[in-house]
Image 1 (cartoon, rainbow, N blue to C red):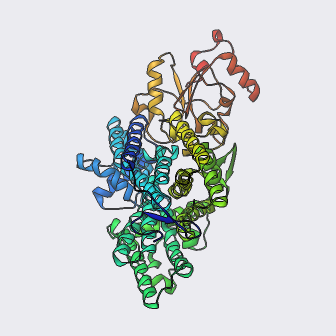
Image 2: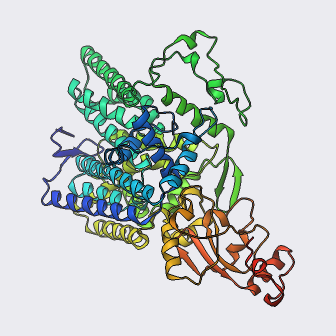
Length: 613
């Protein structure tokens, strides 16, 4: 039968079935791809310095385990932090966080200051702890890849499953963030797990499958606030299946399914509360201090009240108990407040307050390999013009709807645009749908299979050529990682990951002293790694050695934009540009900026010539 639970047949868009061959050696291929993926993540995790978000995650996760509180980093649920820091706490049960920088005010984000202090307190030992946390997070990515294989195989066959798995395993974006302690890959993996289990329930309703689906759904909700949109999507998908399904359901059967759907949603709520230790659960809505205009009411969005407000406080709605943990709801409020206040965003050389509706579309266009885009185009053409490549419409709707709503939700938040990784939960669904092009192998279309194989090889080669610097990956359309910083900023190019590469470069180039370091990311203090430096003067340039982060040279104030008119002497990774500026170059740039020229070295003190002091 089409789409049976046994998984050995599927259906095209007209309902005709086609066989899914039993895998011959597929298990070995799957295991090999996952092993390679895990090895790539484990190795790159040892090569990069901690990112600005990871130091905050480490401090927050330790505080969760030691205090049972979840107010630190409340803008994201705690599951990935708890997983990352669990082995750290098991091996270091007495490890503590310095609470001197903690602030309980609503407007404060103390996790970043505490994370910074944590690294200063523990120095190189903190780096080894973060590396342990990174390794502990790798299973999330392995799970996501396995689920891509399973769902693609169920829909389109074994070859498609292997293609979907390959796209996941060699995606530069997945390799970039799968090596970190950040929650984005965990959200992508558990998000597709929730959708996959829900799809199984839609096809074969039952109380056991509904219970499993609810638990997995709740775990997904504990990774990223973005996935809260699935609480609206799941009931809508069920209605579509019941109204558009071919078979008629008796009234009693529909009532049973509705009850099972309610169980899925209620179990998810229970798992969310369990993940927070029921901290502040069932608190009346009117007793929460909120920051966002949506929840707080009328207040200055650019400067919300530090004590908060609550538009429901004097209404009957304020008496209703909220079936969510306190810091889950307050995390949603803080995120909403951030988007309302707007922040500076960067795209293609332009800085603006707020963002662009197409930012994430553009970001994915330049951050994913061109070979992957070729595969996507082939899948679209096969869907439109070739029979036998697609599953049923309902199956594909269930696959594509989560991808679309995640992209739409994130793109609608134009208060600021900083991180393409925000749409990572949409990636597995796109990879699974794209994998249908591999049906060309079983349908006897060798020309299409050859083009698809070439496109996959291109995508893999593009990623491995840049590895392990996948955080800085950009495709050839924008000049690769060396040209990408002219298009996107923030964590898309740099989040503090290349300090260890700078340290290694300085060890091999001892003549690069004294060094002036332009550093815009508040993460690991470079001095904690043994990097001696001074800060460059904003009234430069001056002759000397400089290491300038990508974010520093693209700063919206333009203090160091003159470095973009120079050819770097070297690079540490792709996010730190190293320059050796001569007196002649310094004076040329100073004339362009309308600054007085510097005198010759014979009449210039060393401190003036180097710009130190």
